[in-house]
Amino acid sequence: MTGPPMRIFIIDGQVVFREGLKSVLGASRDCELVGETATAEQAFPIIPMARADLLVVDPLVSGEALKGAIRGFKELAPNTEIALLTSNAVAQDLIDGVAAGARGYILKSEAGEAIVNAFRRVARGQHYVTPSLEHIFARLRQARFPPTVLDVLSPRERHVFRLVTEGLDAAGIAERFGVSRKTIETHKCRILKKFGLDNTAALVRFAALQGLMSQREPEAPRWT
Image (cartoon, rainbow, N blue to C red; front, side, top):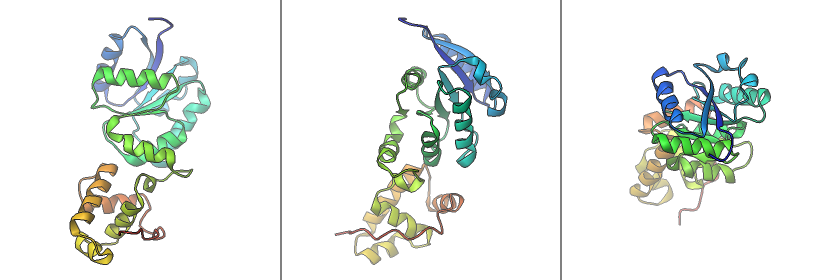
């Protein structure tokens, strides 16, 4: 160890996971746990005194609540970096988190040492996103600001997304654009993967919850 240990504060409502993470951190000579709470509300009065290098947060909320929490932490501890550590890959949480000031989005399914290495990168002020979600982060960095969940989709994927949420099936979309049904199904699979969803019904619910059902129809892309 060449310098002082990385000071880490954990916010996670899962006691078992928190204990496991503490055990992993304890085995790393360059890590020091300086605080832990189950909720953001419990952490707010403690954060300024903790002088943590890294705040690890399980995003129990989403949308404006998530962005508000991250901004609140940054106001209380502007020199503390933030990493979101979660069980579920939610594209919008990644987008909202990074837009609000978080530098990391890490899945709990990663190996313990990989998680600690991610912590080290974020604590140094570098961005880290779990490799399986890098495609989302790459598009986010190219997107307009403020970003939206649709910025992770290509123009063709955005149009397929819009038509699927309007009730068209793959055959109907394929006929409209003069392409094969397999082509549309491929785009649908990519969309579902990017949003961490399993099927069309889940995609429609997602669009409704994100307020995307009434947005303006995107310009139709060229398919040939």
